[in-house]
Figure 1 (cartoon, rainbow, N blue to C red):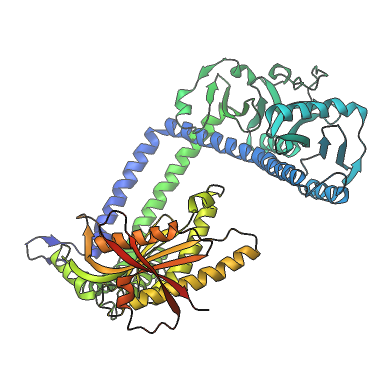
Figure 2: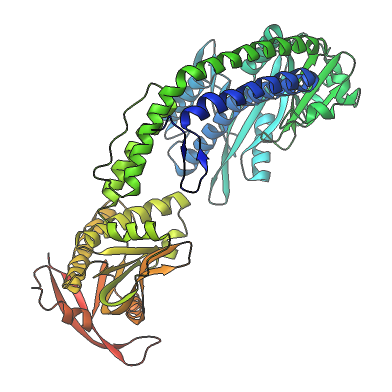
Length: 614
C-alpha cells in the first residue's frame, strides 16, 4: 500500500506519500516559518519601499486606465465617424438627420465629450452639443471659425487623426482636449470630425484619491503644464488667447510643494525605483515622495502622470508589516496542523490517480478506472483532467496502432517502420492565392484557409485518406497507408469529385455575397513511395517520400498553368486512372488530355481531366 515504506529491487528505500506529506511537508513548513519570520523582520525597510512602490505603481496604473477609458473610446468613435463620412454613410447635407442622431447617440454614451462637430473644407459645419443634459444641434458662431480652420490646417498637414494641444476654458474651470480626425476621399481632404473632451471624471478621481487614500495625484502636459490636479479649480493663473498656444497653468501656478521635486529638487530614490515598476522617475526630500510615469499616447507632447505621498506614511507601513508577519506566522502554524488532518485524505486520493496511471502504462485504456471527484479543488481539477485524458486516449487509440505504441514504450526507442508501397497521392492548392491575400488582414487569411481546408479535408477523410500536411494554401494527402487499401486510387478520385462539387457550390455562394471565388487546382497520381516514420531522433512523422509524390505535385502545377476560369480543375495521371478502373464512374467522368511532359522528369505522363457529375 502507499502508506507503507518499501525497498526497491536496487536496495533503495522509498518513502511513502504519507511520510512525505506529514513529515517532510511539515518540516518544510516549520523551516519556512522561521525563515519568513527572520526575513520579514530583517528586511522591513526594504519591504516597506517595495510596498510603497507597488502602491504608487498601482495608483499610476489606475490613473492611466482612467485616462485611457476616457480618451481611447473617443479616438475609436471619431475614427469610425471619419470613415463613415468618407464613404458616404454619413453626410451633413443629404443624411443630416441620421448624422445628428449618430452624433447624439455618441454624446449620450460618452459624457466626457462636450460636442461633436463635422467641418467641411469650406468651413460649413454641423455641430451637435450637450446643453443642460440634452443633445441638440446648435448653429455655428463666427468666433469658432478660427478654431475650425486650425483643425482643418492640422488635418491637412498630418493626414491622420491627432490630438490638438489642450486649452483651459475659464468658464468651466477645466482643461479641454480636442481630437481631430481628417475625412479623406482618396488623397483629397473633404473635412474633419472634431470631438472636444473634458477630463471631469479623471479630476473627480484625483480628488477622491486625495481624500480617501492620503495620496495626491496629478497629470502634466509637456512636462511643465498642469492638465489635472485636485486643487486646479481653486488656482488663479494667467492664460493666453491664441488657440495655437497652450494656455494651461504652469506647475508653479499650482500650490503643490511636491512640484519642486520635478525641477530636480530633493534626491533620486533609486531604491524605490527598483520596486516601482514601469515608472519614469522617483524623487524624495525630508517630507515628500513623488513618483512619475511618462505616457505618449495622446499627441506629440509627453503626458506625465504622478503621485505624491508623505514620508510619515513609511513609519505606519513598518508597523503594518510587523503585524502582518505575526499574523502570517500564526497562519503558517495553523497550516502545519491542517497538514496532519489532510495528509491521509490526500494520500488516498492520489493513490487512486496512481492506480489509474498504472493501467495506462499497460495501455489498458478501455479498462482504466475513472478517478472520483474530491472536495479539494486541486485534486478535483487533477481528477477531472485525468478523466478527460482517459477519454481522449480512448479516442486516440482508435487511430494509433496499440501494439506498436506498446513496443515503443517497452523498448524505449522508436520502432523502425519504413516500407515501400504503391499509394495514390493528391495535391491541391488555390490559384492566385498570393494576389488574393495581398489585401487581406492576417486574421482574414487564417479564417479563409481554415474554412477552405475544412471543406477539402472532409471528403478526403471520408474516403479513408490521410491529410499528410498543409503547405501554405496547399494540401498533400494520400491513400493506401497505414492500412492496406486495394481501392486507394478509386477512393482518391471519388474524394476529388466531391471536392470539385463542394468548390463549385461554395463559389456560387461567394459570388452571390460579393466575395472573390477561389480557383482550386487538384493533381492526383498513383505510384510507389517510401512510407513510414521519417524524421529526427526527437521527432518523427508518419509520411511519404518518392518520385510519385513529385509527379503528383507536378500534375497539380500543370492544372495551375491551364488558362481557364473554371472553379476547380482536377487532373489525374494515367496510372491513377488505370488503378481506379475497377470502380464504376458513377460520380465523375474522365476526359483524356493526352501525354504531358513533367518538369524535372524524363518521358511523359498521360493526363485525364476529371469532371464531377451534377
